[in-house]
Amino acid sequence: MDPKRFIGLFRDITTDIILEAMLVVVVAILFIWLTQRILPWLASHLHSQRRLFVLALIPTIRVLVIAGAILWIVPLFIELTVQNTIAILSVTGLAIGFALKDYVSSLLAGVVAAYEMPYRPGDWIEVDGHYGEVKHIGIRVVEIVTPQDTVIYVPHQTIWTGLIQNANNGGASLMCVVNFYLSPDHNANEVRQVLEDVALSSPYLKLSQPVVVLLEEQPWGTHYRIKAYPMDPRQQFQFMSDLTARGKDSLRKMPVSFARIPAEQSMDVSRF
Image 1 (cartoon, rainbow, N blue to C red):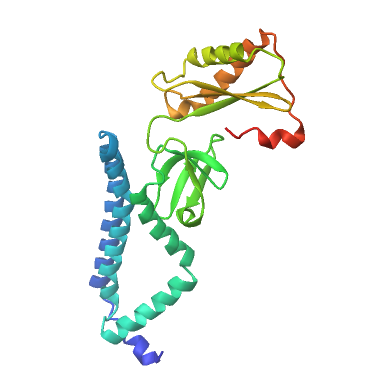
Image 2: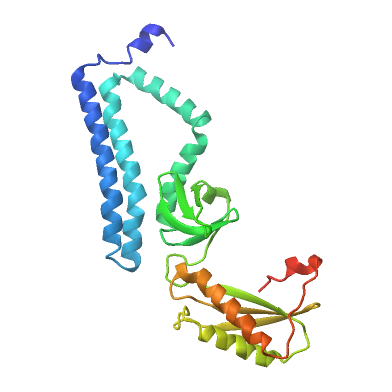
């Protein structure tokens, strides 16, 4: 690019222009901060689809405010003639294409996620083997907190190619599964009844949801599963621990023995 033409891109920078640009930045930051405080508060007083719609507005408004601030500030410093506009778009396109490809992909995926809603604040999701509760949906990443209280930031672009497992999908019901492995020589009906009673007597159980006890015969023994729902998704680990502890105590009082799964078959016990 001709140096003279490059210099001609910019306007004469004055104190008023700098102050106006700073004011636009401050107003944009303040507006984004207010939406991140007010909209979650408003959503907490709404229900069903209205709540989800208000939460989805947060990343969208943030993108619009940032875009508006950029469109306001750029003409303050740059003379937007036809030639200058073409030059700016060319340079910006190259920068986006090479340096910001992944970042822009995550930004666009964030906008898509705001309306497709593969995850929402409060959802329990698994992405690339990481499981946790969605705490915050940012402009580029979704923040999840694992059961180990570790914060993980997952780029939104994962929705383009990756698999996202959502355990409760915006609802208050999350199914938990507790496994038991017994030697085959026992009364299966009695065991099923005992495990069902264990689930029904849990203080964490959500009574409005069904309790199901499934079993499957394996070469090494019988695989039992309790499928039930805690009252709150955040209680899932206390619920599963309660079922496991009381289930083992109840089974020890019966004429049954626990099975030992051979190492070569340990990966085949999660089929139902």
